[in-house]
Amino acid sequence: MRDRADLVIIGGGVLGLSLAYHLSRMGFSDIVILEQGYLCFGASGRNGGGIRQQWSTEENIKLAQQSVRMFRQLARETGYNIWFRQGGYLFIARDDESAASLEKNVALQNRLGVPSRNISAAEARRVVPGLSTNGVKICSYNHSDGVLFPWPALWGMARSVQELGVEIDTFTRVTGIDVRDQQIVKVVTDRGAIATNRVVNAAGGWSWQIAKMAGLEIPNKPYRHEILVSEPLRPFLNPMVCDLSDGTYFSQTMRGEICGGLSDPDEPSSMNTGSSFKFLSRMCQSMIRILPRLSGVKILRQWAGYYDETPDGNPVLGRVAEVEGFIQLNGFGGHGFMLAPAIGKIAAEWLLRKSEHEIFTKYSLARFTKGEVKKETLVIG
Ligand SMILES: Cc1cc2nc3c(=O)[nH]c(=O)nc-3n(C[C@H](O)[C@H](O)[C@H](O)COP(=O)(O)OP(=O)(O)OC[C@H]3O[C@@H](n4cnc5c(N)ncnc54)[C@H](O)[C@@H]3O)c2cc1C
View (cartoon, rainbow, N blue to C red):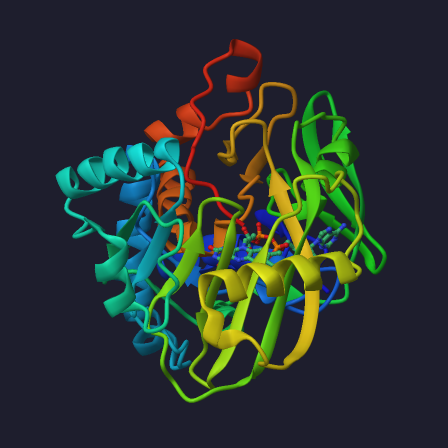
């Protein structure tokens, strides 16, 4: 392991890797990535692979549009097939408030060039064969959203950055950050220390712990989010289906399995990644309500990972006033994978040019104390 680096990235998830991917392609590769487990150990290796441009804020729509364009190139760039399939995303609204927000969101999305549409329950049934229209007020559908397989996306970026000189140390846990006179001097791990003046906190659900090591409080909290996968079925389901009434989402993988999850509103913040019967039961009931033909399908496996949540559902990015050289790249909740390509590229440009970018002001840690908070409302999970 190297004992010195210009930049240390803590966390070998999609955000840390995406930043390193873009920095190294821009010619900056004096970087060490520290990962306590294997590369898919965190949320980036446990998620549903959903990639959508249907958002409620202009920032997220633009970031997602850019990310979709980048995901379309990623396999070619890295040589790893990420199984990106643009089969669409269907949102289901069952009450007036959700219906109104879908209509408002579609108007904003269309203005920014996303070809989403509001469609009736009957039309949605043509998009999703067998969809139950009971209680469905209205849907929104965008054919250019999709799903991918997260693991090869990580492996491809990891291989590419290593070829450009970035060191990735897996099974290397950060245990401390040495700060003197408000300036980072080194990162301490269970395999030795690395001298550096710049550290990126890309530790997902653990980012609050990493911040503490640098003497900083961030408002991020980890929440368990559970997900499951069924036995493989003959391909019949093109889009990812999301029900706004309870947050259920599921899609069909390239291997035919139905894969999806939902959050539990009563789940407390914790470092628990165990699996629960409560989730299994709620999820199966909800899937059958949406798509009765799934009744009788066998569930093969369930697992969980963290949503790294912030008070407004948006990430924490950029510098902090308290510790020089300590950069935040965390707080992505249930949508970090789909935004990672654009965020990684913007963060790389920002770091190299040392110039500000609007999302680094908008999503700075300081916004929580200044009260400049605009909530993303189309958070689902
Ligand atoms: C079940 C589930 C489903 C999801 N579905 C979707 C989806 O469909 N679409 C989407 O866009 N997003 C989804 N998400 C969210 C998405 O997975 C995350 O937002 C994203 O992966 C976060 O990436 P990250 O790099 O910030 O964090 P992570 O992938 O968690 O990476 C952080 C890494 O930091 C490492 N680390 C932590 N502490 C230390 C330490 N002390 N030393 C060294 N390393 C450390 C961890 O081991 C971890 O690998 C889902 C999440 C879950 C859990």
